[in-house]
Image (cartoon, rainbow, N blue to C red):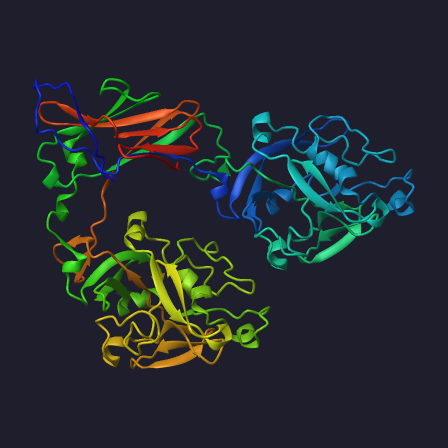
Length: 632
């Protein structure tokens, strides 16, 4: 963002006014660098709290140890913590009674088997109690074998407890308790059958099948009752089981952290993130480096920050930046634009598998600029299915052979995904299933932020098969697979012909590759380009080559000449960055100044200031034309 406004000359070593003041740096920003627990991917390890037993009343002494949790999300995207399987196997978590027998209970089965009403259970009180005593939750209640053990969170600090929500949970009730469900509030609970994926659809995403639930040689308890004196549990094989409440189980408590909880920026020696209770904000300051052509009068810059808007270069804490650090690298003194290059020029953009990706420049009938992946870079991606079979789809063809509706396909999601392995796939419709490459990183995972920004969000057109109503549909994305029309095979596939594709020779590569067009008659066939450049349809479940296509602005700068691979290099914005810390309880202001060789400083009366509100949650950008709030 260029900073414009009324220049302000502030004092100078040379004395007097001077019309040779340097411009300010574009793209000047300050952002609070926060690492949120809610941003961690599922199946990430986090340390929170500790457990130990002091050995009172003839109980064994257990040295304190850190509690390790696993992150998980529900269908609404809410983050939960689940006690890790390794931690759950430690004493005393590996031998806990859900609820002991209650000889005084009027329900005969509970006299010998224990009470399945979760909110009255021994285990619920033990997990949520903060004192050493034990209180009866109802007249027939009895002490469990662990009543003299230290309770689950008794060794936690109040600061640690404060990161958790006193969440509202729901649990089923047995017939003896009136049936139906009831709500209750607690920091810690045992999971329900639905949360571990044994019934319903709102499971935590780390529980997808029996294998994901297994703790070898352990049965672990759930809060869901199975009768008046029995509960459901997860068996040693990860399947559903049930047992008497009075029996011994392993437990895996779950809890719900507050959405603004921060974590450390890196893992510890155990591969775990820790909760951050720092009172300081990490703030990243940045600006675009200045081209030499604009920097004739630039001698340096000063960034000044504090808890108020700095009035001058001495009104706060200063960061001095010399001229050399402010200038764009001399490697790119000679530049061209994408628009100036001939079609079929090779351009490097992005990486996959640690290798630079090479693209061919091409243009459509409107002279818009596109890049399509070269044959050599297709080899880096390997072959991939268009879409996986969908066992629950009522359409029998898609049930067995995958879905040929391109915007809903696994492959379309993958070419636009920047997530890591086992993280990028999200259902695009009710019957969607992950592809066999869900355990590979998304296509954009290794691209820099600046590289992704040069790719234009574009409205594309594709055809629809008869099963989806026929005709055409539009969709928006950064990347797509090419259509048969763009590849010069017809005029109906969506989009217009790209100028580098005029015949079979232009289209052919050393592998069959997908287009985005379905075969019109079937719900699972997709058109491909064969190795001779002609087209043929194959089932979506087959594995073929991937040749992404993207749109790029013709004004984008590239290197003045090609590299050793015969490729032009995109010239992305070069940034200067600094990091500072500042108290979270204070508002943060920073102002930029540039100066010439006479130490005459320029800033703006109406701009060049950034503001981060106390707490560090948001960043307010102030410029001469407007003020707006952006994510911090």
